[in-house]
Image (cartoon, rainbow, N blue to C red; front, side, top):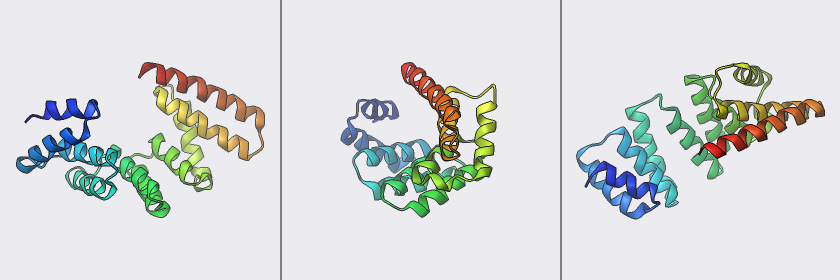
Length: 174
């Protein structure tokens, strides 16, 4: 059984066979990649507790894995544990204050969780000429929500239109 075969099954959404391979690999090699894939598989199979267990193993191996924390926050959110999810998104920001995905996650929990200080950083992300398309469309979206709250509807629509165009371009590249 090989890692490549497990990844192939995973990409084909053949989660049961992928799980068998990764569990077998995990017996002899408890590494980040195997645990991460097992976490993803269990998430897809709706085994939330098992998924979180494997993500926790990933955190023990790599305590600064932003993707792992983001997945954990999403799982916590999907089970209704808003406070825990918020705390996990904030851990992401402790590691990388410029991770736009965490700000978006916080917004999806409750828009009012985003504070003025958050929007200052979101604006910096948006203004960065080296920002990637994901950072641009999420920051434009979040800034549109700030403008809406402040009743600046023209600015809101400008940000929202930019966000939608960038999101469309992003999805075309996938």
